[in-house]
Image (cartoon, rainbow, N blue to C red; front, side, top):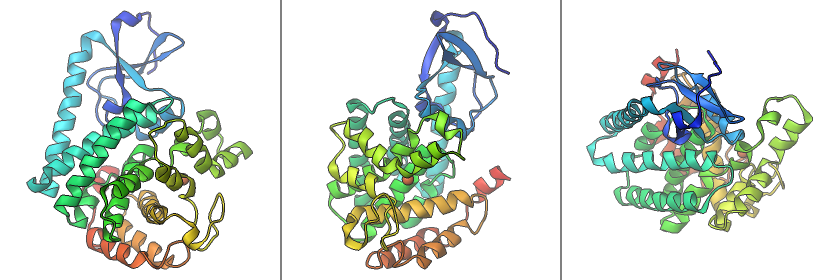
Length: 336
Ligand SMILES: [Fe+2]
């Protein structure tokens, strides 16, 4: 229950939303700050649902607050969730892949931070780029099985998690397509992470009215909007901007915003496009044991239409290896 209270800012400590996991029990009550007033948002034991994260991103809400007296308990719980997640993931992917798991979880926290910032800061981009380079170098060196990426993927529907899934898939597809240069793979990963940045930043007032001209316009313009916002940060490369601009273009020429066709589309964008469609289909079918197989079938069907036939066969091979026989039993139970 939301309650107004007469506590002042000295009683609270702010915590970045990037550090608060969604769908996990909160160790203490959390508050939001509206017009300089602190309003109780969730009680201890509640959790923050994933759709609220997208809402907070579109509203530029970066922090929640806890009472100072509860801060230690709250931070300990966050720390324990993170440790438990690492243990759980390492059990799934094997001890030899621990570094990959740890580095990925660090990237995820920074990606949330990046999406939650009102304007992307150089500091965040700098941290993210370094984390991505380290992650990519580790993955490249270990040359892991495709199934590792299936196990790292999330079925959580926040825009940040979707972006992370797309980035991991793109890295996998890029390596399968013969891309080996570290900075090419870094651009591929960063472009995939930020492909929907323009969509994430559509104001909540527009997102709340999905049947409106303003909503349609914002959706159709989100690739250009993303580029305009990202361009303001001087550390985002032009390769990344190309991926953001073109991620809804289609090989056959019927995509948007420009209707580019064939090789007019940047090579790295073609890879990211497959990853986006694959993850969207999985998200739309989450909970179904056939979701990965169905997604692979849809991608295969679009060979030569939406996707470049010169790169797709290798991507399909890697998808079948990693995801073809993999069933997300744990999430299925959680979602039923
Ligand atoms: Fe998009």
